[in-house]
Length: 317
Image (cartoon, rainbow, N blue to C red):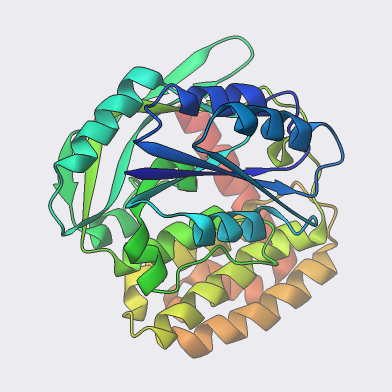
């Protein structure tokens, strides 16, 4: 029924909890595929020990190539009808995951992607994010706030991914989930959401990428991802306006990202280079005046985005 793909790098403190939450499902319903991405701690030992006790755990190792390469390898190894990607420090809710599998069995062939609710696990509290039971068109998600950045927010029909050459972008070290989800939604026919809290997103891991100061490659990946998506759409005859809102969102995230030490000069130079490519693919992006301002004056553009963030913060207090 479902293949659960877990990319693991130095995840020894968490990987056992992650895999055990998957083992609560019947072995006939789920295969658990762990890709050890060159871990230097005990991750591989723990995974192999668990695999020796459970016939539905499959462990594969590769040199460290990053989460995208690990997930792509896991997708190639998957055999079941549906695919769920998990982070190695997160875990599933047994009851709602079982309900999800029951619902997956009953879906029509036209439904290619399902989404569900999740918990954000913080040090001092748990925040619940619920979905409504509904069916919608993928374009509705692409053009609204209901679009989810993380790939663990969705379960994908495997044939959708394989038949449409949908992979995680290797070499893009930020927005790889967003990139993957956008491509999948571009090719999907119908999306089903369920009012189930299936997933626990662990924000207590201080070693995760979201807690680190990032490199220039991190911020640059946002614009590389935008042009990678546009190139994919051109190659696969997807209308480019279908991803207009998401390309805009990636450019906004580039301007709002203050987690790197990139210089304003380098930020501007890279923006100009990638913006020119984006405009050549999607001329409508020139209609967004705040990006044109950044193109001609990055200092002023950064100030504009900073002021906007302050105004939003004050309004939401």
